[in-house]
Structure formats: structure tokens, C-alpha cells
Image 1 (cartoon, one colour):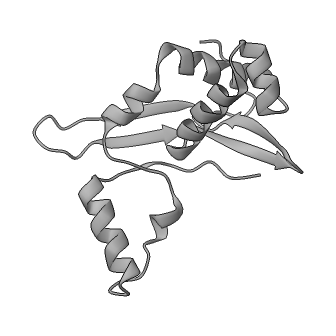
Image 2: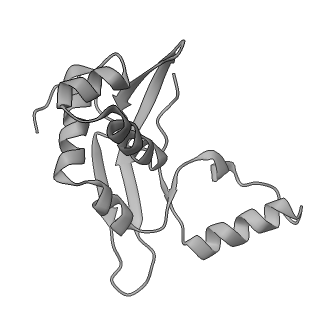
Length: 138
């Protein structure tokens, strides 16, 4: 099982500079290098469309055994669901339980808290993990 990760807000320039410095051997890779990174709260907001929120709700409610099962259950094309899940996983909103060749999507976010400083690009995005056994409707 892949553990859910907390996204880190980072500008594209900061991420690029960090990656170049690591590639050149000028610095070590930071501890957060393997964790999701987003450049603003706007990205999270754009991912949380009505359709994607319904997909997340279906994952939390039914705990599908595979991406194909989720696609059938939501009447969406498997390729569309796969693309959407990859985007949601990249920012830490879902993760996958992998068994053999089967990837079962799981909700990684219970709540998302976004703090926006309107005077600078220093958004803070916190993804809180879901409570165990949570069956909250919504």
C-alpha cells in the first residue's frame, strides 16, 4: 500500500531551481522531494470539479477493488478515470492499494484546508487524512 502524502506548495521556479541544483550536485535532494508538490491553491481548486468530487465520494463510499470497477460504477470511461486519478494522486488526494496488477483507488484526503495570503504567492495547502471508518456523506 502506498501511503498518502501531503502536498507541498512550491512555485514552478523554486521547483525548477531546486531540481537543477540537485542534478548538478550542488545540494542534496530535500526530504520532501518524493512528495506531491503544487504551485498554488488554484491548482487544487481546479482539480476539485463537481465531477471529480463525485469520483472522490464514490471512492470513499464504495472502496472499489480497481480503477475499472470505479469507472463502471461512475459510468465514466476507464481512460478518463485513470487520468483523473493520476492527477488527484499527484497532489495527494488519493492513493492506490496495489495487489498484483490491480490498483485500488483509496481516498487520502478527509479535508483540505487552504490558506491564501492575498498579498503574496505563499499559499498553504493542508490535506488532512480521512478518519478511520469514516462514512460521512457529502
